[in-house]
Image 1 (spheres, rainbow, N blue to C red):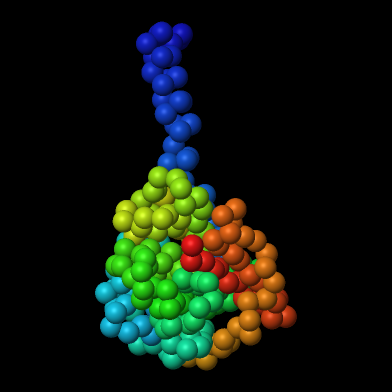
Image 2 (image 1 turned 180 degrees about the vertical axis):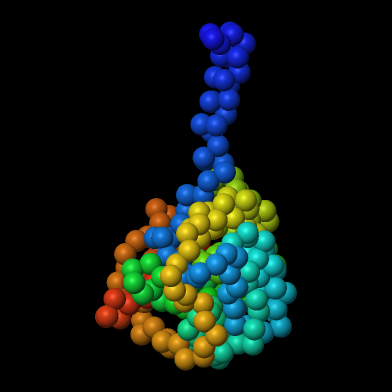
Length: 251
């Protein structure tokens, strides 16, 4: 039976609305398809607490924020390393703060990769050399840096790398004013759901204590943002294993 003009009009409007949904509802900022191997969702990933009292509440906020994802839960456990050099522990993420020096970076995230895409351990470091002095010694900046670096260890990249754009309301967005960019947004949660939409036949989320230690340098520069405030390095460990380092530089 022929469709009425009204039904055709409504159908056309629906088609236009649906065409706009992917940019809003689907993620598009995964980091190289890197992900933790696991056999069920949601999965639990341990976060080693190697931060001091100045960072305790910030780490707690980050853990709560990312646990709001439908596919993963972060749980804080006693740290397995000293803040310097912040060695990795297999099967989890170690988070550390210290004054790492006048080296230009606010925070780094490192992930150890095997099999091309599987994360086996991760490290987040936040640099008190900058984050303990103006303009970075604020709760907002600390929330942004911690949230962003832990987000990288889950397999996320940035949503936007232009400091001059309006804030997107996510810690995965570059900004000069982090007031509204301290936490993940729905776009981040959608991207995590996309990254972890499949299950693996094995798991890299383990309760073990012997990791691959500290990376010997960052390796080769493989990419930088247009603003040069973010860089990614790759260190080849051989036998199909590598370390990726995501660096957030101070402005």
